[in-house]
Length: 414
Length: 135
Image (cartoon, rainbow over all chains, first blue to last red; front, side, top):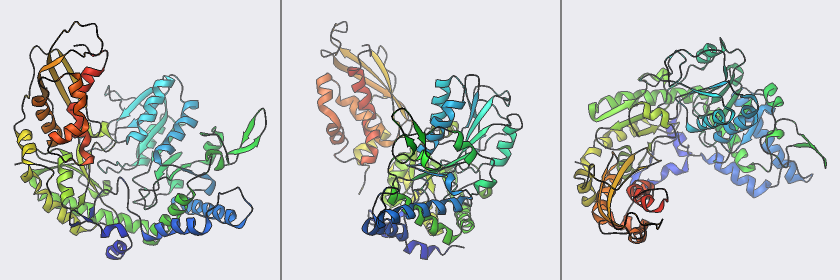
């Protein structure tokens, strides 16, 4: 189990007061807070090692190059990948766009279908919708049931007829819903599609998985995995794309420029090896080093312990919310085995934004709105939801406090 | 501190000019991208509707009605605005601006809620600004 009190000591921001109250940060699904070790790693780099990578023969450039290489090795080991398969991007959105531009544009053709789940964050929905329009491919949406689970039959939104017809070239799916927390049985779902589409390429948005549970890409039936550093204790500005080496090698670059080339001639240019081929220009060196420190921190806790802690919190929250009766509506599955650390709900008769603002008066930070997942949120017949997300530094006492203050919300508007 | 002043709560609970406007000259829907709320605004105007001037300079709002589901801030803002804009023309509306809306709502709005506060106002502006928006 996690020593949460010790962990909390290591996150300076948790000492903040908001409107005179202790900060209760329940928005780690949007971005996590950062421990001292991550802040220090980036600060140390700028103070002692700052130099561009791959450019100089002088000591500091050698050091910064080594630091980025080490961070890449840490991330690779953390998710069971080969080092050269780890591509640093700006964020998960950029990782997903990279796949769309470099793989999708070339390989998705007229008559093909792309299958996207209704659980997706807009970042794994919109790029494929746009691609399908441009390349005249069919955009299919894999529906969810009333509890926000993917339905077993593969149907498009427009018809209930089974559409597992061998036209599907790509599946874009999340492993854990950012909005309502549903955990997806990736193997089962992919196998279902693969049975009719043996060559289907699978793009997994693991932004809400990698920070919260053990992910081993070598055991997943997927070709690409995208996630962000800032949701896993790292800084903003760094994301990761993992891709199978064989697939990445066949792809054209996404961005052109420095550091990604092999040989540049007046007539033509060849591309560098992986991962450089996909990393044009100076990367966010300090950010990558910070992400490496974040991986060290999570490894020191153990990802199984992280998941256990969150399971306990979400289970506790689901029970506690039952005390609120019909004051609240909770969305999504009511089973911790199928749920990540996100709890989506609404307060009866009060708009999600108003709930969030009243909670802010008590120092509670929650997200409200559509959580960049409009197709999913609206499938529940509402335009907005409140979302509380839990992480390693959250406690049961904070959930008690949230529940207590939720009772105050309707009084403001009475 | 309270973000919800009595006047906001009053307009939220008893929204003014809520509903459908018969014989409306124009109807427009405005959506809040932060939460998906949509407000419908309808107005009747005074002035030469057949005027050739594209920018509708000579039109004056005679009546405004609105409807839609929203939060306390967007509801109160639409309600207050529906009273405030009667007699205004395009120039008056533009002069109102973000500052005018904040002032109308009591002088203080959490920056995170500006989209809610500005929703109905943006819809109204669009009526007068868009060339293809017929009146």
